[in-house]
Length: 201
Image (cartoon, rainbow, N blue to C red; front, top):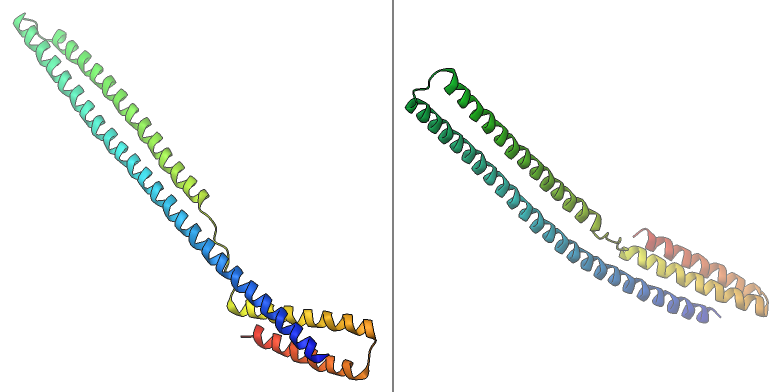
C-alpha cells in the first residue's frame, strides 16, 4: 500500500514539476516577445517624434524667413515712398503718415505670421504628446515568472494531495486498519515536512 502511495506521489509530483517548468518557459518566452514588441513600438515612436521635431524646426525657420521678408518689403516701401515724396517736394506730416501706414501693415503681417507659427507649434506639440501617450498605452505588460522554489513546492504539494486522495479512496473502499492508519500518519507527516522544507528554500 505504502509503495503504491509513494509511486503515486512521485508520479504526480514529477508531472506537476514538469508542467510548472514548461509554464515558466512559456512565460519567459512570452515576456521576451513582449519586450521585443515594446522596443519596436518605442523605436517607431522615437522616429515619429523626431519627424515632428523636424517639422517644428521647419516652421521656425519659415517664420523667421517670413518675418524678415515682411520687414524688408516694408523698408523698401518706406524708402520708395520717401523718395517719391522728396521728388515731388512733399515733406512733413504727409510723409510721416505714409510711413505710419506702412508700419501698421507691417505689424499686421508680422502678427499673422507669428499667430500662424504659434498654432502650428501647438498642433505639433499635441501630436508629440499624443504619440507618447499612445505608445505608453500600447506597451505590453510582462507576466510575473514563477520562481523555481514555488514550482517545486507546488509539485510536492500536488503530489502529496494526489497520494492522500488515492489513500482515501482505498481506505474507504477496503476499510480502515490500524497499520495503514499509522503508516498514513507517518507518511502524511513526512510529506508535510518536505513541503514546508521546499517552501522555505
